[in-house]
Length: 304
Image (cartoon, rainbow, N blue to C red; front, side):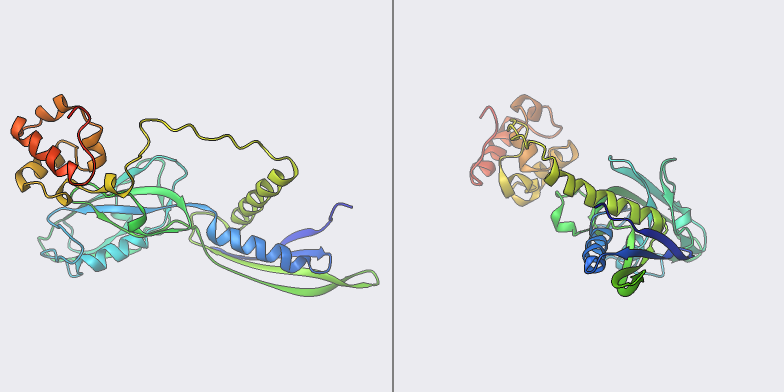
């Protein structure tokens, strides 16, 4: 027998809503509530800043002349910006201001398909004559991702931990209810708080769809095809992620490679020798130095 129950939105205010799901068969209040809560918190897609470049700043423990906050405080404020963005590709947002006083999230320049949900968030305070210029990368994802989990950023970029989840908090409780003379039915009371980039009602619907997709794979399993390895896939492991500054190259050589886009071991190994020779300030002797440094890491240039 198919389950028949109602979902009612009993309360709605700002980014909060309370739902009642009833009547559920005995025990199903906790079954449904636990599953929905877990998916709501961990599996919904959201957007966040993953890296930032601040003009005149090399690392997060710096200070910026004319800005009241330390750079670290400024970065922490950037992490609190909530973006409404559904694309799959990373996008760039920019901040360039000389205004005295509060700099807010709404001062960011964003693409037309990106919306800032909390534009009144204060990011920094500038003194008269100060200039703040920054470029940020916004990506989509699920859950929480630390900066260490991502590939090494380009030179000058400061990686940030990212909280993608658009749902901030979920509570639920199960109460007894009756249907006719039967008194052991469950009523699930579910409370959802979001960050403003999605309504609680839509968040609940998305969570239910995710659960349905998993259960559908049990009922009507799709064949899992083995992925065919391609030469372009990373087979170097952790070594491939090392930057050119980390393999013992002379500073002049490392800087020249980084400026030309060959900033990791993986990119060096996949490059043609003829490409590297064309890099400004590099010659055949520099290529030999590069290859020797790579050999010490167990790899070498493609046509060495």
